[in-house]
Amino acid sequence: MDELVPVQKQKDGSVVVSGRDLHDFLDVKTKYADWFKRMSEYGFDENIDFAVFLKNEKDDTAFGGYRKITDHAMTLDMAKEISMIQRTERGKQARQYFIEIEKRYKNQQSQLPTSPTEMLKLAINSTLETADKVEALNTRMDEFEQNAPIDPGEYNYLSKRISSEVQNYVVSHHMILNQKQRSQLYKDVNRGVKEVTGVKTRSQLRKKDFDVVDRYLMNWTPSPATLMIIDQLRDEAKEQERLF
Image (cartoon, rainbow, N blue to C red; front, side, top):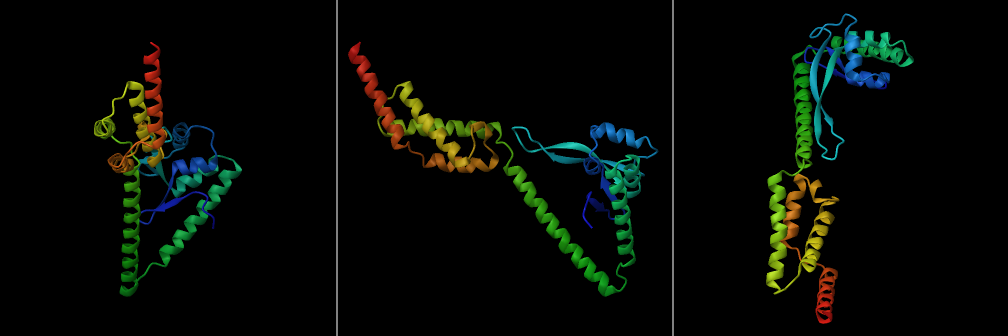
C-alpha cells in the first residue's frame, strides 16, 4: 500500500498522524493554523484527539538552518473524520487510506510474540533499530551544526587573519605598496577563500568552512596574475609622478 500520509506508531501501540502532513495531502488552500483551528471546532479535544508539539522546519532564508513550527499529532479516528469533512476526492482517498492503516496495525497487534524466544528476538531487533535511529539523528545534528553560520567571533578572527597574512607577505617581501596595490592582495586572498569554500561572499561562511579557511590562509601566497597587476600599478604610479 502506497504511503499517502506518513503515520507514526506510539509506544502505547496507538497510531498518530501529523496535522501538517494531512493538510498538505488534502491540498487545502487555507493556512494550516486557520484550517486546524476550524477543524478542531468539530468536537475534537486536545490531549484526547490530538496533541500539540513543535517540530523543526528547514529555513529557506539566506541564513539557512531550521526554525520551529507548531504541529498536531492526531489520532487515526480524528484524521479519518477530518478527511471525510473535506468532501473532496483527496479527502475520500485519505479516509480510506487511514481505514486500511488501522486494519494493518490491528493485525500486527494480534501477531505480537508470546514465547520468551520471540520476545527476546523482538527486543534485540528493537534495540538495533533504536541504535540506527540514534546514529542517524546524530549525523543529522552534526550536519546541522556544521552548516550553521560562523559566529561573529570566528568571523572577526578570520578577518584579522586575512589582514595579518597580507601584512606579513608585504613585510617579508620588502614591498612598498600604495592603497590601490594593497587592495589587490586583499582581492586575491578573498577570492581564494570563496573558491575553497564555495561561497559567494564571506558572510555566507559556515562552521564547516572555518578550518578550511584557516588552513588556506596558512598557505596563502598571491597569484602570479595579482603580482603582475601590482607591478603594473607601480609602473603607472611612477609614470604619473614623472608627468607631474
